[in-house]
Image 1 (cartoon, helix red, strand yellow):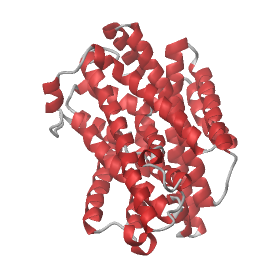
Image 2 (cartoon, rainbow, N blue to C red):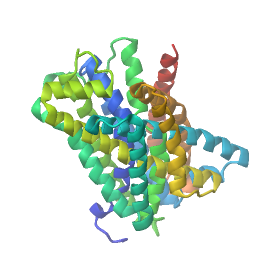
Image 3 (cartoon, rainbow, N blue to C red):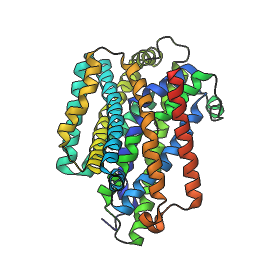
Image 4 (cartoon, rainbow, N blue to C red):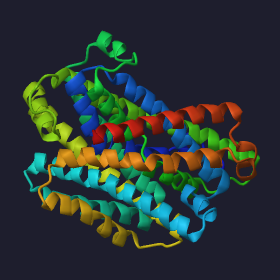
Amino acid sequence: MRRARPFLLLGPAFVAAIAYVDPGNVAANLTSGARYGYLLVWVLVVANVMAALVQYQSAKLGIVTGRTLPELLGERMRRGGRIAFWAQAELVALATDLAEVIGGAIALQLLFNLPLLLGGVIVGAVSMALLALQSRFGQRPFERVIVGLLAIIAIGFLAGLVIRPPDGVAVIAGLVPRFSGVGSVLLAASMLGATVMPHAIYVHSALARDRHGMAADAADRVRLLRGTKWDVGIALTLAGIVNIGMLLLAAVNLRGVAGTDTIVGAHDAIGAALGPGIALVFALGLLASGLASTSVGSYAGATIMAGLLHVRVPMFVRRIVTLIPALVVLGLGVDPTFALIVSQVFLSFGIPFALIPLLRLTGNRELMGEQANGVPVRIVLIVVVGLVIALNLALIVLSAL
């Protein structure tokens, strides 16, 4: 394994990247394109660059130290602090899972006209099967399935652009940073909150560590980190293209169309504009998004619990427990799109708790040795972390007004 070619090192970042194309992203990106056209393309570009920088740091931490971010935090905290930190991280993971199960349930309703509650149960059952694959056969088969689902997601959300491509000049204009009122600021913060996700930061250190192990020597470490850069770069570029594609799809086909503030309404409008075939592919992409992201979310929750509480709960037990809140929301008849938006706001609370420790640990020379971030990299990361936290605070404040 140590002498494997660089492309054989690809995989962990593709699993983490699923978090960046989950149903919460679908709701935020479609809403942005439908309301503001190409205005906020730049937000997704900036968010994706930030996400790539952050995810590489998480993967590097796992490879260099041989431990996950939650494990390293658990080693540095007293019992009360560990429990409190775990509680907030677990709540964020539950909010993430809520969005993912709801998104999958909406897709099943669009495809088969199933009740949302039944759809949520089916999504939970399929995610258990995917987790069983990982438990039974290891990480690589799990990665292959997730990459396959990622391909379906990409096709599902980009196919419509082949039928009706966007205005190239307008897309370039959308790369210029600007807003159009408070509503666009709120939506931009929501898009960022749906892109830089806490559970993806926690889990990537585990994915990289579990795939590669701790590097045996300096040369091996450099080789693994070089391969990881390619892994993160390719995976996050694909996720960014999909996210931008969602926004462009809405900008071209949904701008000014009534009822497109919900995923169901957007699906119907896409079908009316581009035909039932594209609407079907879109729904399949949404289903793949929900199934893949909820499986990765459960993996992340187990990583968080094991690292901070030193407790390993069977994955199936975790899956059932974390599924309950989503099923309750669906059973109560809460508007699913509203629940998706609220879940993205809730995620904003957890981002500083993941980003700030990651920044500190990857800059710790005693822990990271020669791979510790130098001053220039730390400055860039401080700016990135500051921007992410500021925009998410803006999302919280504006949502409360």
